Image 1: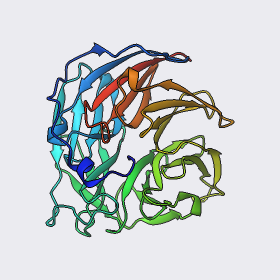
Image 2: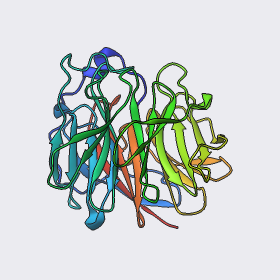
Image 3: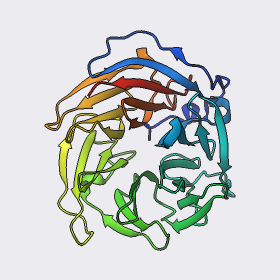
Length: 321
């Protein structure tokens, strides 16, 4: 998720027509190893609320994206074509009670092996806020209610235990929910997850037997081991000094990861000891990056344009391992 916006910035959403099939090169920059060849693979329509918030990758080069302000789930083809799969119901009050934001937020998304999509929706209302599911060819359905005063944001799936983990940015909580749905459990309420003014726990990933979370306000990357009985172990801070951090993706080299830094318009390479370097910037097409994922040697960066108010897009780059 993004840095706090003024009301005028939040409503500034009327630019850029969709040019989904474009594979235009981004301006050159001093891209640091191990990333190279950055390019913009798809442009989204800001005027239609196509502010991409999170991404789940699928075979064949497809990507599933949540459009935060559009209340939509979309499929982006390998060639950049955008297809809307579902539009979520608008809350009766328009979403003005959504914590920290004042508008409905479609956030984290993951894909199961059978093609089922799970995603998060926050509206500030008890009837809609929670974990949703979309089966191939089906209709969106809420499978677990979450607190209306929370802001479910990051989402991760453990396919081995069939458990969904949800980062709540307002309540500073990581929830666990079975993929079958039901009552959520407050899996971790560690103080390091709490916000300090805007949003706390944000991006979420499962890696090497642990749940990893970011904290946007505190600029940290956090690791929480999953114990044998499924409970949360002791939280440790693995990196800090990155205010505005949103999502992360692991490169496959131990605990080395890539981090999307929303407000600085950067992607950082973070080593296992917490040291970091900038590997992508606004010169490569970044417009407030909100999500990052990796397929093979290709890095996917989703850019919402929350603050720049221009050209929300999907940026690709090559990762040298």
